[in-house]
Amino acid sequence: MPVSDRPWMRFMLGRAGLAEVWVDAVSVRDMTPVSSTEPGAPRGAFNLGAAYPNPFTGSTTLEYSLSSTGTVLLEVVDVLGRRVNVLVDSVRPPGPHAIRWSPAGLPSGLYFARLSVDGTTVTRPLMIAR
Image 1 (cartoon, rainbow, N blue to C red):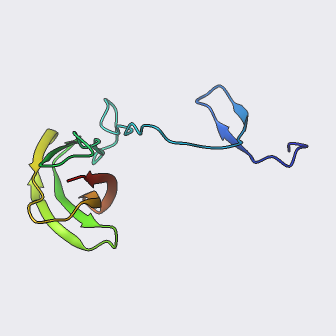
Image 2 (image 1 turned 30 degrees about the vertical axis):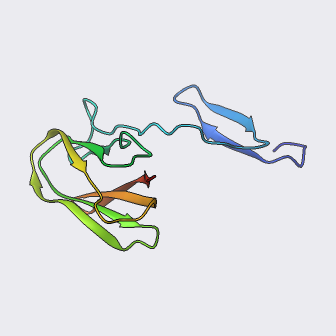
């Protein structure tokens, strides 16, 4: 355990073993989604990439990929979790998929793309800037 009062955490770094990290401040400049659809991924694995462009004014593209056929629900929700659009609600085959979203009539602000596949959900932020 560290001797300092500074914030700290421990984590496993691959198979290299235990590493100790000292944290003074954290800022996130870019988030890269972790893909679970690489070769050898478990059946039912999927990935929702970052929307592009984001922030956006007129429309944005959402990409997702499936490692196997699955029941997909891709929806957009507001900051209170209320559904504002359903983009996909069907069984989809494995592989990459893309859908363009044009949020007609919605005000500027923060929204979330929520992808659920066979009961597992991931979420990515969307920013409308008009």
